[in-house]
Amino acid sequence: MAEKKNQTPEQLKAIEESLTKAEMYVENNKNTLMLLVLAVAIGFSAFFAYDRFYLQPKENNAITEMYMCERNFEQNKFQEALDGDEQYAGLLEIIDLYGGTKSANLAEYYSGISYFKLGNMEEAISHLDNFSSDDEILAPIAKGAIGDAFSELGQDEEALSYYIMAANMRNNEFTTPVYLMKAANAAYLLKKNDQALDLYKRIEKDFIKTREGQNIGKYISRMTAEQ
Image (cartoon, rainbow, N blue to C red):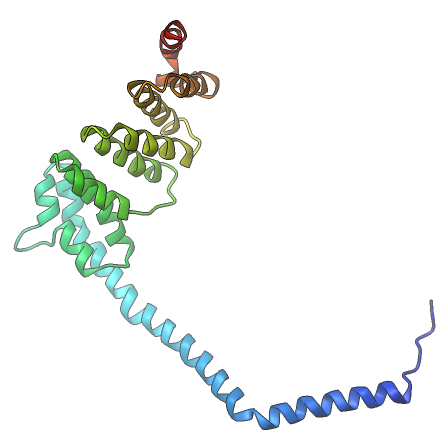
């Protein structure tokens, strides 16, 4: 093992000067440093207080209000789900009153689907676009529903775009083949036959055991015959 070298007088002097400069900096700026530490402490305390005394109670209230909305939604009472009544808040009111909560975000999804079922595609698109989720199933369903709304409006280019987004958001056997099929059909309507064929073949390759995959051969045969 190499022997540890003794520090030279010049090195010791340099270290002492560095320590002195650091001490002088702290001394000259102690008020600023104290204010900085205080600001960080206040910021942390404010965030903790905001979360505990404002956001959490707000979230709990929103969860309570959502119960009747979800019940109406499940019973296909979409207008009641949106509007509520004299006793219970509706989805739209929950979005307004409890913005920033998970429940308000979920209310955007329910509102979008409710408007879709009621035939108001513009509002459906608006609310579904406001919804965000990392859920394996719900996230692509919401994106795909926007595609459905555009399709209902006859805007097939936009529908195709959202179907592809929905298909690519997650890779599972529940949503991916559904939106690949919808994307392929939309591409076919737009006379984008090469793109449609590629999408059909992706279903054949990756999702042959799904419902969409069972009959995919006839779609591929049709596209091949038309080329």
